[in-house]
Amino acid sequence: MANIFKSSIGKKLIMSISGLFLILFLLIHATINSLYIFSKEGFITGCEIMGSPIIGIMVPILAAGFVIHIVYAFILTAQNLNARGGYKRYEVANKAATDSWAARNMIVLGVIVLGVLAFHLTHFWADMQLKEWMGAHAVDPILLMETTFKSPIVVAIYLIWFVALWFHLTHGFWSAFHTIGMNNNVWMKRLKVLSYIFATIIAGAFAAVAIVACLRANGIM
Image (cartoon, rainbow, N blue to C red; front, side, top):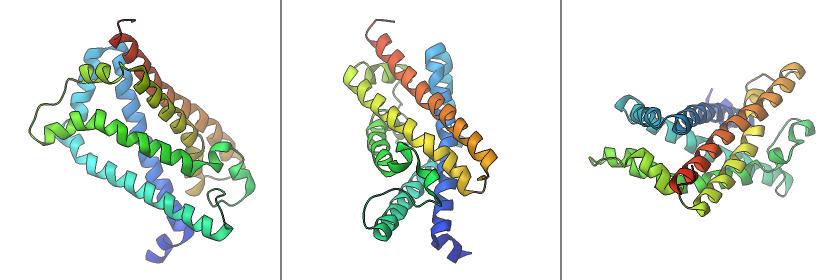
């Protein structure tokens, strides 16, 4: 069993499973954030749920998922570089699987997503969950949301992040299912369509929240 996970197929399987785990987190996170648009009270309640001890236990697991996904992404990319003599794309079974711009630039998109993620954590996680863990009071989520997104420059940075995330998901979503076995012609067509729908919903929800927070913070909405 250990040898399987050391193989190229095993590494891609780990990438896919960790990716699906992160996709589920994005769905939950986008859903809670979207409450801010419709109900500030609902958003606060959602944040309180996410800050509960039970959810707090999931934070290290989530962090591990991110680390595993990132590490194996770089491992597979390095292997491809060595095998092909230069940056091409992820190792895939056939050319049809890399017919999109996102597929050819997944590692670049991943680096952008990772870079702005660090920026994001300093804005929200550090002022909410981290403060609670340290025995201090978390910053009010509404105040934090509107203080962060009051600057159009910050909003622009986040929108670039969401665009990169959209591209990353349009390939990553169906690719993960492809790796775990849902790779026949019927399912592939469906999964590629679902990838664009899912990516648009997730990135669109995050972008809408940032824009609405900016408008409210500046007294426009």
